[in-house]
Image (cartoon, rainbow, N blue to C red):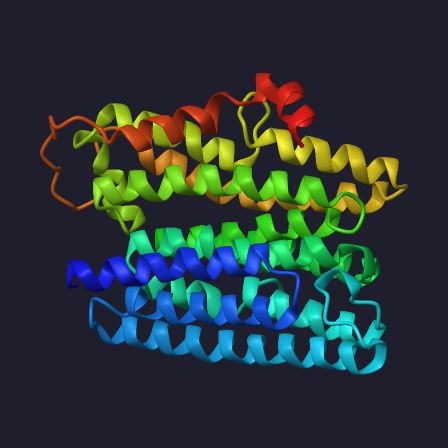
Length: 346
């Protein structure tokens, strides 16, 4: 892709995200979401592969339907209450339509079908944008409207997302699809706590974005897309592979690592809100996701020779690792002891 064109699309992506995050009026938020959608489409379809074009088409159709629903819900609310302010979403029907629209934008169950297909058809760099930056504006809108959302609906969608994200990821061999289902299960954790403590939703999103960025950038530097190629990648960059193992375990939420922090705080908050059964169910469902993270981790470092795979071993690369990957990976592993400081910030 032409560098000037890529620069324009990247700036438009940042602009759309900034407009949505900083807006108070529904039409401005909608305009920001539309700019975002139009800016990411060329980045998804830049390889001109039929799968990439298909992914871009699916993405466009779902996002435009979600944007139309969002505009419809805000217009219904304005019609009944006379308010266009995002925080004044008080009409119950408008709140339900808004929840459906943002769930479609994010890929929450039952509006998740487009997300794994789009991520599978996109390059790893675009997949990183889809998993992190593109989720920030809808989550911000949920954060701003959280007092008027339906807790029962959100809890149901959250538990279904955690269940489906875990189950569907079990038999995948394509790493991008595994990360897509991982994203769906993490969204479940974000949605379940949204009404009770919205700041925890944002904290969970920031931690998830940090760890996912580390995983995507590592996979991109190793040029790995399938489990079979991941098995032979340890000869290429041994130290980076060892760090990828720890980052994946952090993404799974294992205790000494950063990923345990949001899960721990969410379970604590749910028990405070007398929702111990929901906390128990979603904790048990996260074990499903743990299985496929462990499978990825096993393929990353633990399968040493003799291999059963027919793939050629890859040459060792002596070039230094990208500094950004080093910083993100370190933060993805070691932030748990800083939990008190993080909590004072939020």
